[in-house]
Amino acid sequence: MFKRTRLHKILILMTVFLVIGFTFAGIGCVDKEGTTSKEGIIVKGSDTVLPLSQAEAEEFMLKHADKSITVIGGGSGVGIAAMIDGEVEIAMASRSMKDSEIEKAKQNGIDPLETTIGWDGIAVVVNPENPVNQLTFTQLKAIYDGNISNWKDVGGDDRKITVISRDSSSGTYEYFKEEILVGSEYRQDALVQPATGAIVQEIAQNRGAIGYIGYAYVDNSVKALALDGGEGVFVPATQEKILSGEYPLARQLFYYTNGEPQGLTKEFIDYVMSAEGQSIVSEVGYFPVVQ
Amino acid sequence: MKKGLYREKAIESLLYLSGVTAVVILFLICIFLFKDGIALFQKYPLIEFLTGTRWYPTSQPHQFGLLPLLFGSMIVTFGAIVLSVPLGIAVAIYISELAGAKEADVLKPLIEILAGIPSVVYGFFGLVVLVPLLQNMLDLPTGQNALAGSIMLGIMALPTIISISEDAISSVPRAIKEGSLALGSTEWQTIYKVTVPAALSGISAAAMLGIGRAIGETMTVMMVTGNTAVIPGFPDGLFAPVRTMTATIALEMGEVPQGSEHFYALFAIGSILFITTFITNIIAEYIKRKYRFNLGAGQ
Image 1: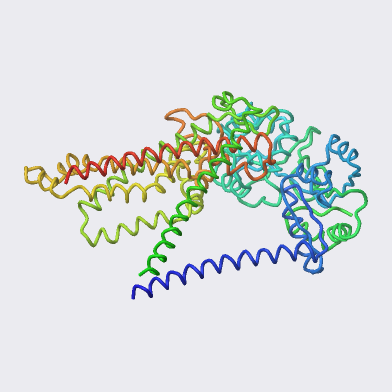
Image 2 (image 1 turned 90 degrees about the horizontal axis):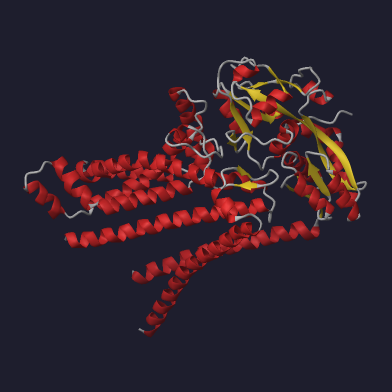
């Protein structure tokens, strides 16, 4: 009896080791297949563009089983740096390359070429019960840097403003800081949410809250404000206004390549720019490039 | 006979090896954590890290002030302990002293289930149910505050506190309790004058382990405390948003460039966190050992 239970234990142990062993063997096989027998490129960069590139790459690989496209996030800056170093074929970016980056690329013998693959709009949202419908960039800056803390100062109720921001790893955080805060810091007492869904959730139930989210996330539980970027006209956040470029918080999404794309890189970018690829852009929640 | 001896030896060394592996892993984690944490101070002064009051990791120049995060962790943990320790002890007393055997058999496993709920589920519950409730009931600018974190962490620390204090209380020797009853004290007098003091060190260890659990918890606090890096006031800071050390690491690790100052700053926070929980555990272990000694003396 004693011997038998001991045997059982050994059997169980062996099974566990075998399972672990097979798992690693499996991982090894997959890895090999991915790197050697397939033609492949790497796309790296902005986390804003990441879900779009992933969706595009999945569809593309369904059509071309022998080709592999690896999509990696990390941020616009990270992607551009990798392209400058020649590590990746395509850099994804939610901003244009800085002059310093272009210079560095030229030094490395890389000639960056910009392709606009879609548009993204950032909506400034409040609770639907908030009477405020529009803000100027100056007011928005004052709210986010701490100079205005009550809704009555921007034409609303006498209520404390709960300012909501994304965490600092979000590309939208940087974009908003550049466009709205222009050199100032986010106020220290702003709520920081780890995800856009959490911002929507808080604003939907907090009458004093204000936040910024990708246009794709706007639903009935929040109200998007009309913004005035300094032209003296309030532009509502609608698809039409974002696509026409009138809405001040809209940005282009880019792919950067070294010179004219060739081979698989060209094939992939052509697919993204095709009618089918551009319909994926809308599915993911961004706006297709007007052609 | 000899074959059996070899087998015995083999199994013994296998077990020894497993034990050594655990210790080696611990040391490796320590080394890498501290190595990357200390790397920060080649570029950023240690004093500024420890006494800075502003956490702006991505602005120019960087500001890595630990204080708001440290105090954030402390106030949330403090609130959690204030809520969960009295409640936990009360439940432990009820289970071990007053409840019938059948009742205790049902209650104990139910409490253990609390410990098995994933923290993200607690966080989701907190965000959707507790946060709006707090905001409306207390008429606060936002329900995402230290109090919400404290309540959630308190609930999460309850199973630890209850089961360890329950162990401590039920291992108080019967003779002591019966002696007290025989001298004419009521059941309640026996509980708070004899049983609880006799089990006090075990209960303190339970509280310390509860603190350890609360200070290291990440997902739940990140979802309900608002993550505002300001030094909280006391006690009004309980009703304002705060950011803990754990939440900062989780929030910012995602996109921080490897090898940057910000990256090392997060490791430095991790080191501080590690040291804090390490000390808490040592204190808990020390108290626990003392309590074993007490028990021996009692018998």
